[in-house]
Image (tube, rainbow, N blue to C red):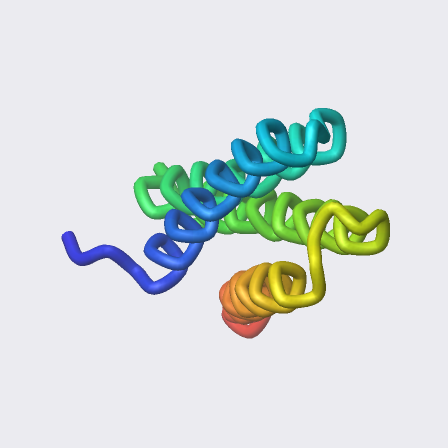
Amino acid sequence: MQESIIERKSFDFAVRIVKLYQYLCEDKKEYVLSKQLLRSGTSIGANVSEAQRGQSKPDFYAKIAIALKEANEALYWIRLLHATEYLNDKEYSSLNSDINEIISILVAICNTKEKAK
């Protein structure tokens, strides 16, 4: 089975988040906000992966909806880390671009469900 675009992008994003978490803990001594981002940022891909192997179409869309919620939460933590100066403008811009692309794909997938009704 070929990996989907959203699977690849959400996995790559999770890898970035794990590395960012390590950096924030080791270099910036920030543990609370980064842990929240770690949880939500890695959960996106986990839910997408579960959705790809879902038992039914409703199960697929339920997991995609959860992934979208996690992506929106990750966006919040990224914005907060930037606003509190744990992320510089360049880091923020790159992460913000990635998460917004993931959100757009997930929204498009959710909209496909609505059109099918």
